[in-house]
Length: 144
Figure 1: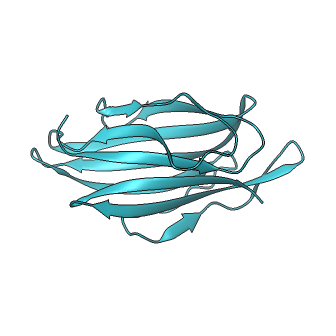
Figure 2: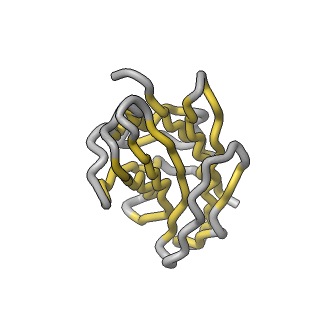
Figure 3: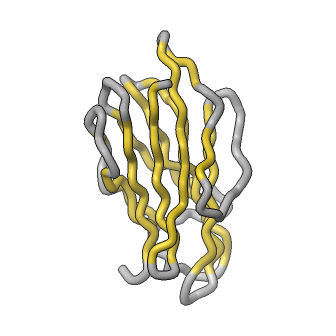
């Protein structure tokens, strides 16, 4: 596969989290793959996706949706700009209320507004971490 970015999920929710991958434009990112379709409750740093960084030139975007009990909570969106040998990466969050975070490429923690669903309140937190020149993304889906 070559150089890759890995996505990890930590959750403190009392239910399993369902994951789905939505390929969105401007170009389909076929190198993004889910490594888990479902994560059990209260898991820590479970790898959920792999994104190959060796892609052709151009812009590619993918959305990793997180749902609980079939209800959409929030997404991690990833944008890659291919350069042939490697790529640049940005990520952001998205929620159903049409709120979308700004594209980020730093190692700080960024979170969604609180998302109320069925009497519970959730937050999606994203943090980047550098590993041998490539960034991995850590996602926390938390009950608040």
